[in-house]
Image (cartoon, rainbow over the protein chains, first blue to last red):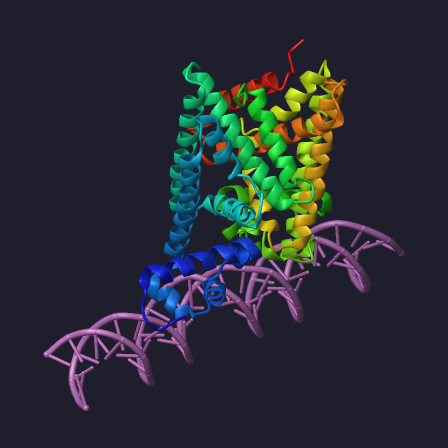
Length: 197
Length: 197
DNA sequence: AAGTTACGGTAACATGCGTTACGGACTTGC
DNA sequence: GCAAGTCCGTAACGCATGTTACCGTAACTT
């Protein structure tokens, strides 16, 4: 790592390292030293940028949220119709390529780490609720006539399905290839009454 | 713990302790000492029953699988129709009470621990595939006329939804109460064409 | 160009980990 | 009722961890 300070870039680099360790070696090996090695620096820099390990985890968790949020907002802006936006946003939550598979693994890792860590748990709830509200809004926009509780129930079904499929696929890619995940998503959208216009 | 040896019971007790630690304190604190404390014994007993920590985890993982399998087989045997069996079996996979919520948390914990632990990963795949085959069989029995790929896609959608809903609910019970989870399950079954007879 | 500041690498610390070795206590077979 | 064997608690070991203190050095200021 260069000697010239570039704090935001370094923090991002460290967060990406956290995340890489999490994805490739699991939570058990998510140590300051492993993160430093993955970032190509020493523990000194890590502890210089973050007061402690928990702060590093918190930052990485927020980076994960921000990454998916940025991607999702791009997809939503580019979609021609609310239904296309809904499908695109849901599809990016699946484990369809290396990037999204890694994100799913990391997401599960943070979810597991939230148990017994109140701060990570709170962060998880905040981010997940934001995600739910986004889907809720898109379902509402696609189906303006639906009553409130039908929207809510459908939203829960869709996000649960996507999250579950991503988790299952990231742990067993052979059984849940991208085509199967997309077929499942389209079958569900169709079943719930989202007819492609 | 009694001095009189009862190896299987002790192993089960230790496995339940693993699981309790996992559910209440998270993976990070899943240590031999914490397990011994939760089981009310010392590390000596733990290491006497299991050669090492990995064997303990493996056994706890299998216990989780066995528990859900036993419960599910009871539900399936008692169900009057294939559809009732399908619904009951899927519903027990949700996080509806303390028992199933704990199981969901533990399941997520093991899933996260599978990253970087080939043996746990293999165990996860085996157990998850057995679960998928069970749902596949029930969907097939309920809808005998469906083509093979429709059964497969619907099965994937249902198990992903249940697993995802359980994970979301166990991490944020206030947003996903049991009624919401069951409403989602019924809405999905209905949407996919499983009309209650 | 020299002084000053802040960056970050090095090394040490205490702690808690998995694991091992040992020894006392309880059960068992005669 | 005693010797043998099994069970399991105790305590130690080596190691890896999070964290801290320290110090060389690069970059900025004047």
